[in-house]
Image (cartoon, rainbow, N blue to C red; front, side, top):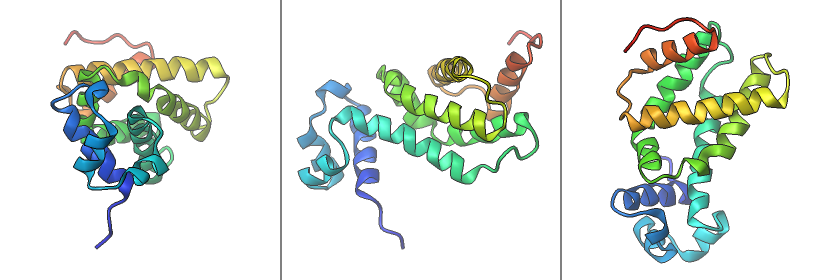
Length: 171
């Protein structure tokens, strides 16, 4: 059986604490106690508790990049695969939205947008990446705010229609 990483234990502990507390109310002492790790383990991996959320975002997108094949059947299928993975993270992403912490996800989302645009061969300039990162951030926030009411398939159809300037049916 594979041992869990210290960062995974700290991340899980932070999300548990976020269920009942705002991030500024969570101390490093409380976090490491919940995670079952020592203070040095926290500071070896993070500087601030906010960094746990940033690292969660980076790790989430790294997992997407490892597991989703490049352009498995076109852009639509790629977006669907990403949304299907994000849906598995709905509890954490909803907590991030509920606690007003999406600003901590902006850098990981931006890095992911640049990577995916280059990976899919559609990169043209940094404005494009900023545009998509902003759209992804806000679409993800709205999806989380609605408790992921739409399925990954439904949200993918919405995003794809927007990307292609297609008229959408009212929901």
